[in-house]
Image (tube, rainbow, N blue to C red; front, top):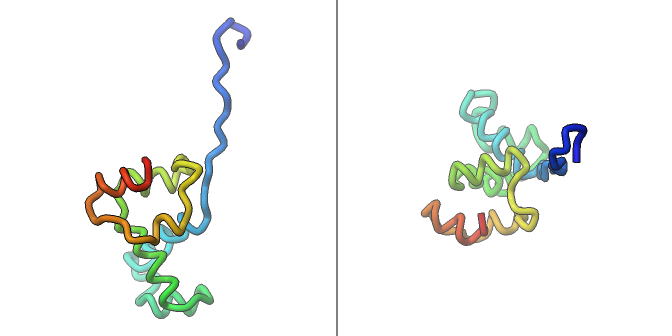
Length: 100
């Protein structure tokens, strides 16, 4: 209880996964022209093109799933391998598969 007798809400630490956030950042670089191609982005990041492409595919997730990843509020069990697996294209089915 706080000083006014109200229940204190526990502070929830965001579960921000840097690899998941990297997908968003890379996508922004491609859209803005800061990186001209996936190949140049991969070279600059010291990664191979296949890895960068796989990570960029995360931008095809449902918008609210992407938002939860960026905010760190995605389910704690959500892992990169879940997101790079064969997820359905339909957003509602993605959310069911990911338990969001």
